[in-house]
Length: 335
Image (cartoon, rainbow, N blue to C red; front, top):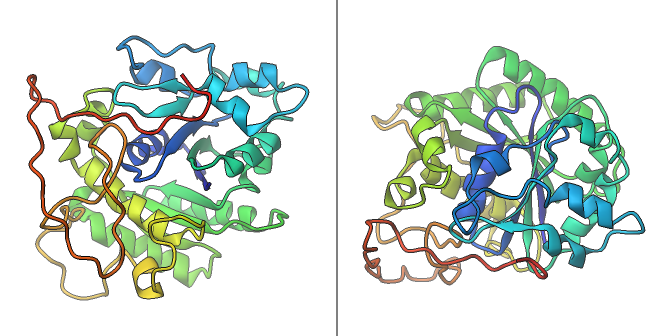
């Protein structure tokens, strides 16, 4: 349904972690695809459904080997793998040398990602270089999301990257969003400062909000699914960001599609004024957590504007103290 390209300009600060966290809380069927030309690390970071290691030979490289005569959306599921907890991933290349022979792949792959139904694709594009064949995939995206730290050098690189992306010829010209990877102690002020710079520079991009820099949460994301991870700053900020991204999309069927602009376009950064004592990511709203699917909780029905808050159902206790897991909907043709 929707293709969201996640990337950064320099150093790829936490893009893979953000992609996995967003996939874990995404409220619709989702595939996390590793499209980093420099090589990915999902196979070394996350456990497979059986608890073992993901197969490094199954993923983008095996898909490319079968697509020389054309790539179809229904082929993608044959090369995905499932993580512990039920999320499907398309493992990427293992080194940059493999990308040199696959320059033809990115355009067809982007078109197939964009036409998967009813599955959204979060494409981890890693670090974007100058030009390059990955631009063919970015042209097919419904949205490009750039991650940055609030440091002077990274924001300077971000400005150059946004300008370069906006100058790429495209039929649809995907909107560009910016997400600030911020320390929870200065969360709101960091987002506001980057937003101020982007606004003053009149960049063709929108600051969507933040993603918490949470080293402990990122370590738990390596397969230790459960209550502690669900309560981490990492997942709380991922949940908020997922809602903002879906609100920005105009793809039919989005839980936020058709909502008034005051809901779908509400800024994440509060108006200027006295800072509250709590500057970190907001806690889940009282009365229950946002609906989501994937490895963290069972799927819930989408909520609509004006609908009453559903009653909270106590979550059953797992014998080992872990939160219950319900597999996310699988990609057609997947394992």
